[in-house]
Length: 446
Image 1 (cartoon, rainbow, N blue to C red):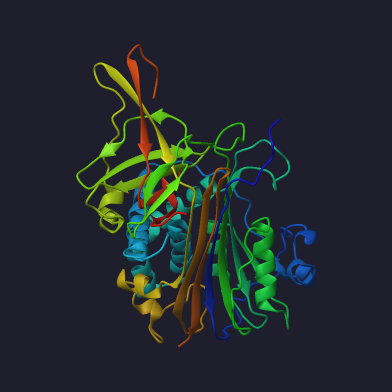
Image 2 (image 1 turned 90 degrees about the vertical axis):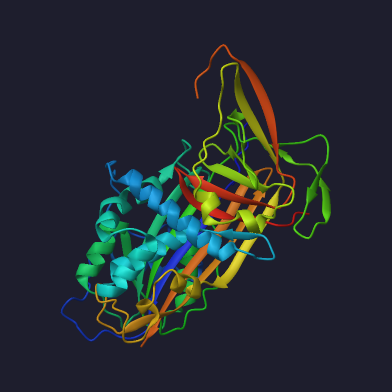
C-alpha cells in the first residue's frame, strides 16, 4: 500500500515593500474581484476575514504558456544568474548553506517590472536579461512552476511545484493601474488591500501558511505602516520514487570527512542507478540523483581540495558532459549520500549591490514609478532558507524579502555500474527543468 507523505517542499517568498503614500489618485487600483482567496479555514481564524475581504483584483488565470525559441537562452541566463548569486552568498561560509536562487530571481524580476529608467536597467543587468526577454519568457517560467505531478484532487497530498504571486497594499496606499496590470499579466499577481488596523504581519503570515500547507510561518517583522509588499510564494513537494518508498540505507557505515576534518561514521542514503559515469576533474567530481521530477547534483572536492574551492560560478557553469557509453560498455551510477540540513538567514543587499544594482538602494535615485509615484528605495534584502534532505525526501523553505523605505536508450553493450560516494563536505544544486531551485554547500553532517 502506498503511504501518502509530504516528502519534498520548498517555499520561496519574495517581497517588495515601499514606505510612503502616493499622492496621485488618477491611477488608483479599482476593485475588480475575480478570484477568492483559498478556503477560509486554512487561515488562522483571526485573519480569515481580513484576507477574504482584502482581494480587490484577482490574478489572471494561469494560461498555457507556449515554448518559444528564446526560452532556452533565457533559462541558461537564469542559470548563470543563479550560480553567480548563490556562490557569492555561500562562499567561505562556516556552516551548511541553502540558497534559493529561483526566489531571488523572481523577487528581482518583479522589482525590475515595478521600476523604470536606470533602476530597472541595473536590476535587469544584474539578472543578465533584457526587459524584452523578461516579458517574452517569465510567463513560461511561471507556467512550469505551476505543475501538479500526482493524480489527486487533494492538493494537500499532491506532489507539485506551484508559484503564487501577490501584491499587498497598505490601507492608505495607491498603486498605478498600468503597473498592476503588468504584474497581473506577467506574474499572474493577486492584489490585496490591507484593511485599516489590520496586523500586517499576522495577515500575510497567515496567507503564507495557507499557501505552503503550513510548512512555513515566518515572522516577517514588517513595520505596521509598510506601504506595499510584492510577494512570490514557490512551493514544491515530491517523492524519491514512484512508490513513495523511503530510500534504502547502505548496509555499511562510511567515513564522512567534515569541513573541520573530523570524521562522522554513518550509513548513507542509497539512490537509484542513473545513466552515466561521474564527471571527474583535477579538483572535484560530480554526479546526480533524482526524485520523480527534480534533479539533485552533488559536487565533491577531491583529496587536497576543499568545498570552498569548488563552490564557484565557474564550476557550476562548467558544461562537462557525463560519459554514458563507449565502444564496449554502457555506464550507470548511483549516488550514496548523507542526510543533511542546510539553512541561511542574512541580509543580501550588499551582494546584490555588488552585482551592479546601485540606484535601487539610493534615496532620491531609485525609480519605482511603474508601480507608484512614491519616492522609495531599498534598504534591505532578507534571504532566509532551510533545506532538509532525508530518507523520506526533501523539505525546504526560503524567504526573500526586499524592503523599500522612503528616501538514454538500451543496447547490447555490457553495462558497468558505479557508486558515487559523497564522503566529504560537498556542494549541491537542486533543480527543476534545468533551473536551480536550491543550491549550497554542506560542510558537516551528524
